[in-house]
Image (cartoon, rainbow over all chains, first blue to last red):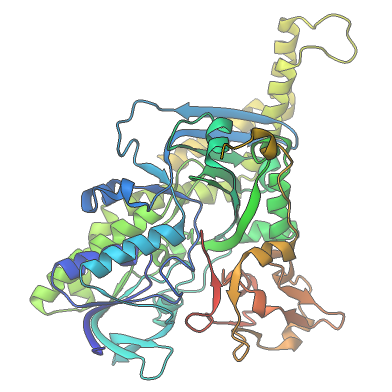
Length: 440
Length: 106
């Protein structure tokens, strides 16, 4: 193996592989380091993949076995301890083969497939190899040091694509330790025959559903969200919750997953399932003050390492943002390569392009919203319960102390009373106005 | 063979910490514990011990004398303990290449 490359990429996730693919196609020599035995073996996500980028580069990805089911339904559920209010969006008129460009997936399969594409394009993939350090000449980063004999590899540019923990960006001085707002994602993949999945979730063929759960019944009153996604013959069942909330709750994270699985409404969807794998991973949702520097002399940071995550309850995105950042990093490096200048100034077009892209803009927008969820805990701790109570009040046919039914007008007045007295119209209106402002 | 719906109506299997871990493939590098407490005296003075309630595989145990035991051989490398420790008292690195957890699904 040559010890000199145009580009050394640390990580072999979706962002790394897209960068490697673009760079290798442009004729640059690329080495990609994966610390697991195969790409994807250390990775975990919720998982829905958003695929416009894949269509552009690999139009036949749908039949390549790298994704599971196309999502035809997104359902959002508020869980109180024993009840559920749900709203579902079922879109059946998107065209095959890409439908709404949302596919459930599993990282061990997806990452391996995408890294294979980078290899086919000419990138060199080195597995089972940890990279702990960058090499420097003065201030300039000139390569990486892998944890093995003679592991020093020189490169004009290093891409830190080493995911949430990004020890490399930290070691290179581009970022601080992660803040306590980062989310711990905890998941089980459970098996169920595909016929049962399709029957139970009202699906045909390769259709899939993504169900998001909010409210105290999902993650024990915490500001977190739980999920069930249908894969081909498995379900991904899990939750995400900020570390500071987990710390304050003082319950074991693996027990919280059991708690969610046993919610009366969730349990019914999971009947007959057998756990196949348990996993946990940090989801690097960072505040603006915690964002790493994205560019320095001889180095770029992409994907989860750069905090490119949109972990709000409606849109859970990340792998698509990682792939976008990988492509933009590759373009900046190809330009720098033509000029033979790999300084921060020469590579800086990456940051500009990223800031103009959906990946940065979505992240920044929803981070404001997440910060608000921290200052307004009632959004998660109070309203879901209160709305579930109001709905139950309105929908309850026979009250305990009546012979006949209660007139609907009385029920409506009771609900109104509840809204005025227990929720507080003014504080609710103020909270909603705050949410609105955070979204502007 | 046709799938029998009645076979899939039982309650979902709920697993203990140990049974969850038993699902995962973890190759342990006995020669090189990749997690270490830097100074047990710091742990002894830490009242909150957030590492003991946030590790997704419950690998951190507070002993009676205030010291912390890490069951590093069942680590799934998420990084939570390193971030949550209020005293940055955990030396945390990735297991050597090819060691540690290996997800089949992810």
